[in-house]
Length: 396
Image (cartoon, rainbow, N blue to C red; front, side, top):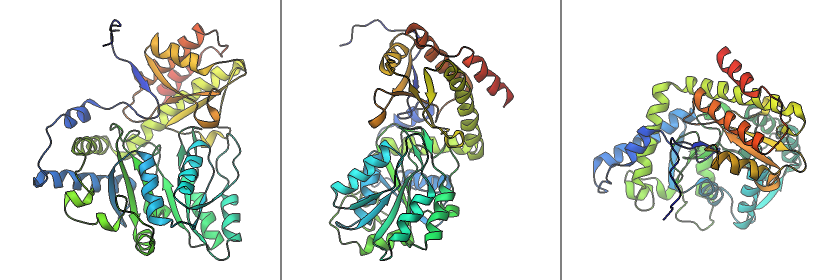
């Protein structure tokens, strides 16, 4: 039992996932489970499927839901599309694209990676070049992480779609929208994305544990032809009107109830308004970080301003600065929980999440807490960052 005294108020959660869960979602998840024959369970699942299709802007795809995290969604995609020995092109974005690539290799896939330059988005020309060389069309799919949560870089999906088209290659276009959906614009059908995958714990404002894939007919046909052994992840097997078969077992009812409530909140606010709110809040964070960087100890990891995510900002620190110390002080003394660097950025950066159930006052509290932690740690930073964030919010 924790005997530490309770601190008043509540801790601000500014990791890029899990993100803050709205009260309406918490309340929806507190309901008792239903028996599997209760028609209200099917209505809840249908509401989640329909809501996700609306949010993804797709009329040509089917939704498959899993009791899993984002890595589970990756595995579902790999298991259905990539037979052992088959090739997949993973556009390198840093930690998360590399994790997806390693997972594909562990499942027997042959992975081709594009070059990665720290702080830069994927170069569409690199994708086009790899596809042009593949005259035999051995590459089954191109895997793209829309927003890499570790680097804070968002990739240009329209430019990547155009690069695939220019190559004349038939590879499927598969996009990870875990960190971007319900924060950044995404239109699955307009972009001609064949598979989109995501998870519950970021912009969708639900606790971790529910993943989804949206699959069009071209991708489903590849899955049908793929003889790789699979069961739990299999898309054709989950094509059923029955809840038990849709989930290859008992559905995660509490998470589904939360997802239904969260989607209702998004549509009540309006998708365009949600996107605009994320843009404004991200701009405020970027204004503060730009000011902090003027002292020379901190900098944006994302070097191209247009690629800086509306979901999370990754801040690289100079030599001799311990980002974990900043995080600890921010969390334990000032009740602001931010994230650390992942993969190659471990010990080199900290991250501010600003997605999901977030408003102007909350982000200002976060920025003030980070400034306070840096002051305690005697980190040199440009003064006036909070004022610049306020000015950006006021101008919006």
